[in-house]
Length: 354
Image 1: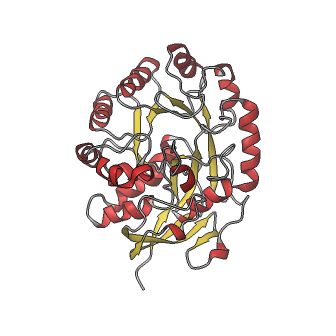
Image 2 (image 1 turned 135 degrees about the vertical axis):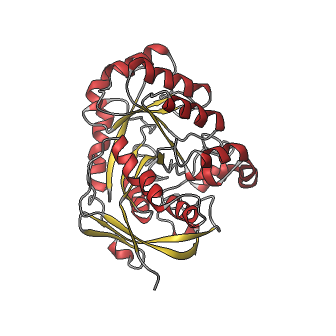
Image 3 (image 1 turned 90 degrees about the vertical axis):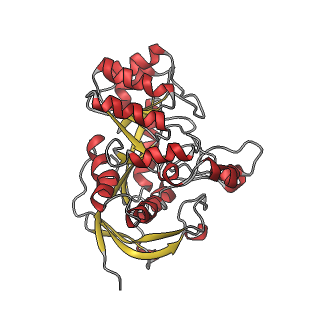
């Protein structure tokens, strides 16, 4: 039997659990089952739902549903809406962080006008993170806001050379900025997008080999977190005339990064920093005592759609051979996932709200 490796429970600060309004793609029970299967014991869910988590009544109603159905620990982002900036102080009492969409998003959460941005940075508590969907020149806008308000800003799913180099320069200048990259941007390029069609369509779009090389070059220094950007859609939606962007990622991210570790692209200590300790520290998330995951680092498996627990049931990495398997997950001393015992999966409601 291969030696077992114990890692802390992983933290994903970028998931889309589709509640409310998209439960046919994913819900709290199915999404947190996928999280546990991927080694994640603590996740943060994005607010671009339908309706979005931009008003207190929607956020509280969604928290009520989550409290009864999550299998691991979950926090919800509040969404910055130009129409509801007056609700930001109240939202902050029930949200883990604020998400501002400076670039494309579905729904009413795009916020690019200066009055909205000023309101967000003025009204959101300094003790809680502001995360930005920022691409291209919008990264410069986010850095400028961090400098002007002298408060931390986190950049989601950075994917281009010029973006990661600009963030590196901001860090070198002492500005309080952090960033994440996704495994799909580390392992797929625009060539894969052409091969995969709608199944390879996401935001930010897959980039060039040069962009990907830059992400790997900065993984040891500039990058703070690996985040999944788990964004499931059904195969029927992906096959439609207007396919939505996004892919599932909770169950494939750790195997992909363990494969990179076996290839010598990062160390085990760095993997733990990127997928556990850094995201928890940056977002001020609570500790989880007696929580760990058991990994078989030598196991070689083929990613297969039929083994996924996410409701959407597919991944663009299907058929890829990876090294490293999550065998068991322990959350606060309780077995909540066992690859060999499906009945051991934590029931809905076993997780906690952040």
